[in-house]
Amino acid sequence: MKPTSVLALAAMLALAACSNETPAPVPSEDAATFAPPPPAASEPAAPTATPTAAPSGPVAAAAFPAAMLGRWGLVPADCTSQRGDNKGMITVSAREIRFYESVARIDKVKDSSENRMRATLAYDGEGMQWSRDAQFEVKSGAGQLVLQEYGDDAVPGPRTYTRCK
Image (cartoon, rainbow, N blue to C red; front, side, top):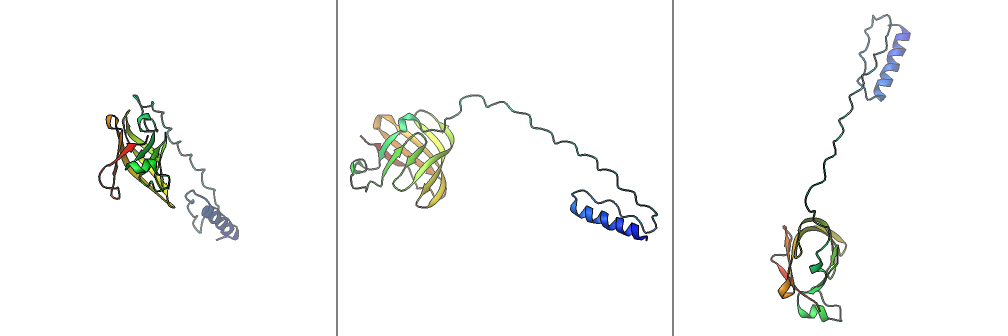
């Protein structure tokens, strides 16, 4: 093999190692000349996504219904305590619920009406973060808010809160 062929072969192999393209075939020892490989054909462009129409019908708002807003207590003392021991009180605002030592923010609304909402909530409290599927329902005549959580580590059974006055 000629010294110039060896140098050309070494240069081609060095370039091929840095390239994403498939290396060109190595010329045989008795090849008198080295022809550069033909340029790679450009790949066809990936098809672009066709925009889809927005979903029709009402989309549930990512906010708690107005009937749920306010302060609620598990027991009457939760609403009246001045000592900070009202561990069963919750405060519901448009986008979050404040518990005694945690805050739950709406992550994804699954279903919502004037008196009922099912959503995935993102919790943050005591240095931890978790997510929970929950349903809230207001019993208007009784002034109650019923909370039911779902999942392996959820509090079992519904919790019934009474609106604080």
